[in-house]
Length: 225
Image 1 (tube, rainbow, N blue to C red):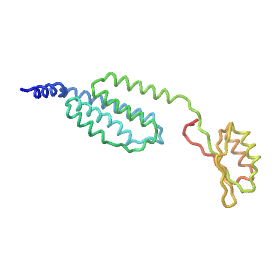
Image 2: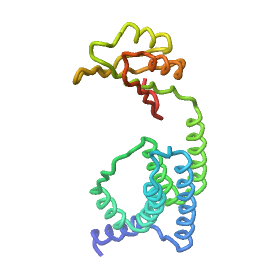
Image 3: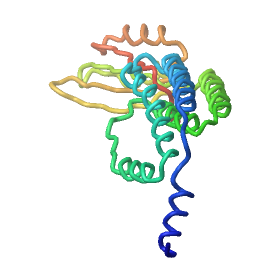
Image 4: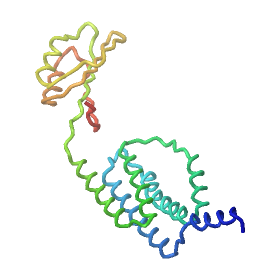
Protein backbone atom coordinates (compact mmCIF):
# COMPACT_ATOMS: atom_id res chain seq x y z
CA UNK A 1 0.00 0.00 0.00
CA UNK A 2 1.48 3.29 -1.10
CA UNK A 3 1.46 6.70 0.56
CA UNK A 4 -1.48 7.81 -1.60
CA UNK A 5 -3.62 4.90 -0.46
CA UNK A 6 -2.72 5.45 3.19
CA UNK A 7 -3.58 9.15 2.95
CA UNK A 8 -6.88 8.42 1.22
CA UNK A 9 -7.85 5.83 3.85
CA UNK A 10 -6.99 8.11 6.77
CA UNK A 11 -8.90 10.98 5.17
CA UNK A 12 -12.03 8.92 4.70
CA UNK A 13 -11.80 7.51 8.21
CA UNK A 14 -11.20 10.92 9.77
CA UNK A 15 -13.81 12.85 7.80
CA UNK A 16 -16.24 10.18 6.79
CA UNK A 17 -18.78 11.51 9.24
CA UNK A 18 -20.31 10.21 12.42
CA UNK A 19 -22.85 7.45 12.91
CA UNK A 20 -26.36 8.82 13.41
CA UNK A 21 -28.55 6.34 15.26
CA UNK A 22 -32.27 6.00 14.72
CA UNK A 23 -32.86 7.09 18.30
CA UNK A 24 -30.96 10.34 17.79
CA UNK A 25 -32.83 11.05 14.57
CA UNK A 26 -36.19 10.48 16.27
CA UNK A 27 -35.24 12.58 19.32
CA UNK A 28 -33.93 15.44 17.20
CA UNK A 29 -36.97 15.57 14.92
CA UNK A 30 -39.34 15.28 17.90
CA UNK A 31 -37.71 18.17 19.79
CA UNK A 32 -37.57 20.22 16.59
CA UNK A 33 -41.25 19.57 15.89
CA UNK A 34 -42.18 20.81 19.38
CA UNK A 35 -40.07 23.93 18.87
CA UNK A 36 -41.65 24.47 15.44
CA UNK A 37 -45.12 24.39 17.02
CA UNK A 38 -43.90 26.79 19.69
CA UNK A 39 -42.58 29.26 17.10
CA UNK A 40 -45.89 28.86 15.20
CA UNK A 41 -47.92 29.91 18.24
CA UNK A 42 -45.61 32.78 19.23
CA UNK A 43 -45.66 34.19 15.69
CA UNK A 44 -49.48 34.08 15.74
CA UNK A 45 -49.59 35.98 19.04
CA UNK A 46 -46.96 38.60 18.22
CA UNK A 47 -47.78 39.42 14.61
CA UNK A 48 -50.33 42.11 13.85
CA UNK A 49 -53.50 40.67 12.35
CA UNK A 50 -53.29 42.85 9.25
CA UNK A 51 -49.89 41.33 8.37
CA UNK A 52 -50.55 37.76 9.53
CA UNK A 53 -50.11 35.05 6.90
CA UNK A 54 -50.97 31.49 7.90
CA UNK A 55 -49.02 30.08 4.95
CA UNK A 56 -45.89 31.95 6.06
CA UNK A 57 -46.38 30.72 9.62
CA UNK A 58 -46.65 27.11 8.42
CA UNK A 59 -43.48 27.66 6.38
CA UNK A 60 -41.66 28.80 9.53
CA UNK A 61 -42.60 25.58 11.33
CA UNK A 62 -41.63 23.42 8.37
CA UNK A 63 -38.33 25.25 7.95
CA UNK A 64 -37.15 24.21 11.42
CA UNK A 65 -37.70 20.54 10.61
CA UNK A 66 -36.09 20.83 7.18
CA UNK A 67 -33.03 22.55 8.65
CA UNK A 68 -32.67 19.95 11.40
CA UNK A 69 -32.86 17.14 8.83
CA UNK A 70 -30.19 18.82 6.71
CA UNK A 71 -27.88 19.21 9.72
CA UNK A 72 -28.33 15.53 10.60
CA UNK A 73 -27.49 14.51 7.04
CA UNK A 74 -24.42 16.77 6.97
CA UNK A 75 -23.11 15.18 10.17
CA UNK A 76 -23.46 11.67 8.80
CA UNK A 77 -21.25 12.01 5.72
CA UNK A 78 -18.71 14.51 4.42
CA UNK A 79 -19.69 13.97 0.79
CA UNK A 80 -23.36 14.66 1.55
CA UNK A 81 -22.49 17.80 3.49
CA UNK A 82 -20.40 19.18 0.63
CA UNK A 83 -23.16 18.37 -1.83
CA UNK A 84 -25.80 20.11 0.28
CA UNK A 85 -23.64 23.19 0.72
CA UNK A 86 -23.26 23.41 -3.03
CA UNK A 87 -26.96 22.84 -3.64
CA UNK A 88 -28.12 25.37 -1.05
CA UNK A 89 -25.70 28.01 -2.33
CA UNK A 90 -27.71 28.37 -5.54
CA UNK A 91 -31.07 28.81 -3.82
CA UNK A 92 -32.57 32.30 -4.07
CA UNK A 93 -35.54 33.47 -2.01
CA UNK A 94 -37.56 36.22 -3.66
CA UNK A 95 -40.65 36.35 -1.44
CA UNK A 96 -41.27 39.92 -0.24
CA UNK A 97 -41.21 40.43 3.53
CA UNK A 98 -44.37 42.29 4.55
CA UNK A 99 -43.31 43.04 8.12
CA UNK A 100 -39.76 43.35 9.52
CA UNK A 101 -40.69 41.05 12.41
CA UNK A 102 -40.98 38.23 9.87
CA UNK A 103 -37.20 38.31 9.43
CA UNK A 104 -36.73 37.75 13.16
CA UNK A 105 -38.97 34.68 13.13
CA UNK A 106 -37.34 33.42 9.94
CA UNK A 107 -33.87 33.44 11.51
CA UNK A 108 -35.31 32.06 14.76
CA UNK A 109 -36.82 29.11 12.92
CA UNK A 110 -33.62 28.36 11.00
CA UNK A 111 -31.42 28.77 14.10
CA UNK A 112 -33.67 26.46 16.13
CA UNK A 113 -33.36 23.80 13.43
CA UNK A 114 -29.57 24.11 13.31
CA UNK A 115 -29.09 24.00 17.10
CA UNK A 116 -31.49 21.10 17.54
CA UNK A 117 -29.88 19.31 14.60
CA UNK A 118 -26.50 19.19 16.34
CA UNK A 119 -28.14 17.87 19.52
CA UNK A 120 -27.91 20.95 21.76
CA UNK A 121 -31.47 20.59 23.05
CA UNK A 122 -30.98 22.55 26.27
CA UNK A 123 -29.48 25.47 24.37
CA UNK A 124 -32.31 25.64 21.83
CA UNK A 125 -34.97 25.52 24.56
CA UNK A 126 -33.31 28.28 26.60
CA UNK A 127 -32.75 30.27 23.41
CA UNK A 128 -36.42 30.01 22.41
CA UNK A 129 -37.67 31.02 25.86
CA UNK A 130 -35.30 33.99 25.92
CA UNK A 131 -36.48 35.07 22.47
CA UNK A 132 -40.09 34.90 23.67
CA UNK A 133 -39.41 37.06 26.71
CA UNK A 134 -37.51 39.56 24.58
CA UNK A 135 -40.24 39.82 21.92
CA UNK A 136 -43.11 40.23 24.37
CA UNK A 137 -41.11 42.61 26.57
CA UNK A 138 -40.16 44.91 23.69
CA UNK A 139 -43.67 44.69 22.25
CA UNK A 140 -45.09 46.11 25.47
CA UNK A 141 -42.90 49.19 25.40
CA UNK A 142 -44.98 52.24 24.46
CA UNK A 143 -44.28 53.70 21.06
CA UNK A 144 -44.77 57.17 19.64
CA UNK A 145 -48.19 57.58 18.08
CA UNK A 146 -48.08 58.20 14.36
CA UNK A 147 -49.40 61.56 13.09
CA UNK A 148 -52.75 61.78 11.31
CA UNK A 149 -53.57 63.34 7.95
CA UNK A 150 -56.24 65.93 7.29
CA UNK A 151 -57.62 66.04 3.76
CA UNK A 152 -59.51 69.29 3.24
CA UNK A 153 -61.34 70.52 0.14
CA UNK A 154 -62.84 73.89 -0.65
CA UNK A 155 -63.29 76.55 -3.40
CA UNK A 156 -59.97 77.72 -4.79
CA UNK A 157 -60.62 81.42 -4.06
CA UNK A 158 -62.80 80.93 -0.99
CA UNK A 159 -60.50 79.26 1.55
CA UNK A 160 -59.50 81.53 4.41
CA UNK A 161 -56.04 80.18 5.26
CA UNK A 162 -55.56 82.49 8.26
CA UNK A 163 -58.68 81.16 9.98
CA UNK A 164 -57.82 77.58 9.00
CA UNK A 165 -54.27 77.65 10.35
CA UNK A 166 -55.32 79.51 13.52
CA UNK A 167 -57.82 76.72 14.21
CA UNK A 168 -55.16 74.07 13.62
CA UNK A 169 -52.77 75.85 15.97
CA UNK A 170 -55.46 75.92 18.67
CA UNK A 171 -56.40 72.23 18.54
CA UNK A 172 -53.12 70.60 17.45
CA UNK A 173 -49.77 70.12 19.13
CA UNK A 174 -48.18 70.48 15.71
CA UNK A 175 -49.23 70.60 12.07
CA UNK A 176 -47.49 70.69 8.72
CA UNK A 177 -48.88 71.18 5.24
CA UNK A 178 -47.78 68.23 3.11
CA UNK A 179 -49.48 68.92 -0.22
CA UNK A 180 -51.75 71.41 -1.98
CA UNK A 181 -53.41 70.83 -5.33
CA UNK A 182 -56.01 72.70 -7.39
CA UNK A 183 -58.35 71.23 -9.98
CA UNK A 184 -61.59 72.46 -11.56
CA UNK A 185 -61.80 75.46 -9.25
CA UNK A 186 -61.37 73.37 -6.08
CA UNK A 187 -58.32 73.21 -3.82
CA UNK A 188 -57.29 70.14 -1.86
CA UNK A 189 -55.03 70.38 1.18
CA UNK A 190 -53.22 67.50 2.89
CA UNK A 191 -52.00 68.46 6.37
CA UNK A 192 -50.11 66.26 8.82
CA UNK A 193 -51.32 66.88 12.37
CA UNK A 194 -50.83 65.74 15.96
CA UNK A 195 -54.16 66.66 17.51
CA UNK A 196 -54.64 67.57 21.15
CA UNK A 197 -58.42 67.19 20.86
CA UNK A 198 -59.53 65.40 17.72
CA UNK A 199 -63.31 65.69 17.93
CA UNK A 200 -63.40 69.45 18.69
CA UNK A 201 -60.96 70.01 15.83
CA UNK A 202 -63.13 68.14 13.33
CA UNK A 203 -66.22 69.98 14.58
CA UNK A 204 -64.50 73.35 14.17
CA UNK A 205 -63.38 72.45 10.64
CA UNK A 206 -66.85 71.20 9.73
CA UNK A 207 -68.34 74.53 10.83
CA UNK A 208 -66.15 76.45 8.37
CA UNK A 209 -68.35 77.39 5.44
CA UNK A 210 -65.41 77.60 3.01
CA UNK A 211 -64.60 73.90 3.43
CA UNK A 212 -66.73 71.46 1.42
CA UNK A 213 -65.13 68.27 2.71
CA UNK A 214 -63.13 67.29 5.80
CA UNK A 215 -61.43 63.90 6.12
CA UNK A 216 -59.13 62.69 8.91
CA UNK A 217 -56.99 59.66 8.08
CA UNK A 218 -55.17 57.63 10.71
CA UNK A 219 -53.35 54.29 10.62
CA UNK A 220 -51.85 51.68 12.93
CA UNK A 221 -48.27 52.29 11.86
CA UNK A 222 -45.50 53.61 14.07
CA UNK A 223 -43.72 56.91 13.95
CA UNK A 224 -40.39 56.86 12.11
CA UNK A 225 -38.95 59.97 13.76
